[in-house]
Length: 197
Image (tube, rainbow, N blue to C red; front, side, top):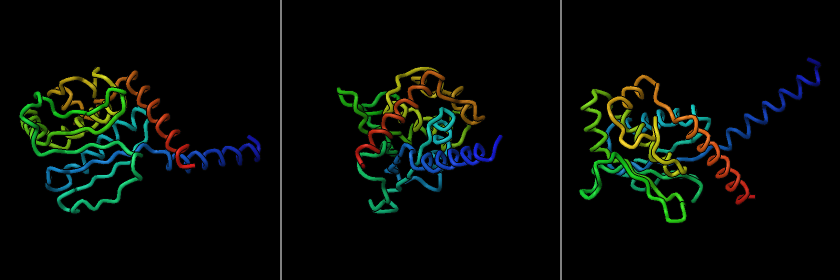
C-alpha cells in the first residue's frame, strides 16, 4: 500500500473513531429503588454489552435518585431513552419483570424494571441480581427501540435458561432484532444531529 493510501486509511479510521464516540445512543437509568452498592451500574454495563454485540454503541448514565436528591448530570432533554428501576411492581401489573410505555403513535416514552421481581428471579436461579436486572433493562430498552417479543433477550417471559445464558455471556438479541436496533439507532442519531445543527 502506498504512503498516501496509508495516510488516507489512518485519517478515515481517526474520523470514524472521533464521530463514533460522539454518536452513541444515550440511555439513562433512574434508580428509584434506592438499591445498595453497584448493582445497577454493573447491570447497566452488562446491558451495554448486549447492545454492543448487536452493533449499537450506547452511553449509559445511572442516576441514584435518593443519593443525588434529583440532581444528576443528564444528556440534553429528549436525546435519551429512559428506564426507571422501581422497588416494587404495582399490584395490577402482571407477573412481568418490567414494562415499556409507548404512545399510540409508536413513540417511546419510558420503561420500568421491577427490582423486587428481579430479586426473586435471581434467588430462584442462583444468579446475582445484576445479571437478571441487565436482562430486564436490555429487554425494556429494546421495546423502546421498537422491538416486539421474540427469542433471546426479547423473549416474552425471561426465565431460568435466559438468565443462565446471560451469566455465561451467551444471551443475545436475535440477528433480526439486532438489525432493527441498528436501524433505530441510526435514525435517532441522524435526527438528533439534524436538530442540533
